[in-house]
Length: 230
Image (tube, rainbow, N blue to C red):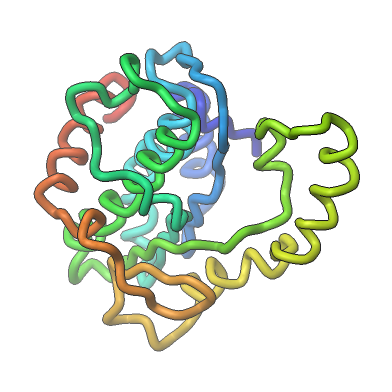
């Protein structure tokens, strides 16, 4: 089914189709992401990287939450990144980074937002039978980095970069393993809200454990998406 995380209208249409055609939703993996994208505002009025990497998933999860609850035991897996470490916190005064935009800066903020979202989601879903996890898939050799600058033009793009990718990156199958682990591993029932990398739980840095900011981001996200939420 078609889904564009950069369009709230598309997210709503997709969720409605799922609810009409599916009687159960056992696993929701929020995996879509863009990286090093030039600053672009979507037709919904949100910065593109922030919407695709975080807000779109937030909206989709909210719209499918009742189906997830009725299908319990069920799980939500949110794909974040170690890139969150490069963000000192959510800039609530300029959440779309109009004043000081940087491609990686926005990427890091969006991935920190995913961690806040997951921890808050886990608290909200306590005792519902729905578990929520965040994960870092590792460096995966996909086209997500296609917008990064390459010194030396085609030599770096077509020769050096593929070699570096094979040496230091996972392939897509390897990159999916932590998401799959959190989706099906039976021993994780008391780990909701936790963060995993290479199929192991990993401690978050203090900036990602700021649940006061997480609560604030949740409320701000609900406000921003009020026109698309029931």
